[in-house]
Length: 201
Image: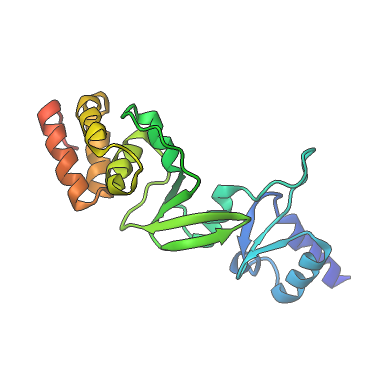
């Protein structure tokens, strides 16, 4: 009876679609490995990676992947990251048109190609990472990855000079200084000084 109650208590802490590390679940039970075995066998949990588990959720369209933010947050044990596809650079008005089929996780801890929850991610580590995606961050990342993009570099640089003044100068300068490579900082800070008057906070 006590064992069943302990398992039921652990189940009550689980949310469909969310992901958990073994260490997260160990806070709610003194028999974490035995309970993990039971929950995996009955399908209440699914193993995503070593020490990482997701709670399946059912929809009318079947079983969707785990919530992406919860999955990556549990994997990294950190919520300072952003997830994006380079195709999102097309929203910046820089003349980029290419579509890309890979997803990037800009984060503070991991690097490499990692498969999580039926998805493939390219993890890029940086000394700092934002908690949410912004147009200023995307602009900085576009310049960071300029040489890897299947775009006309010269045309992109011309468009960048035209568009940079349309961004909030303080937010852009913050993104440049925190997330830009040395070469990106050189390019964008020069453009900002040429195009804008601003106060650095």
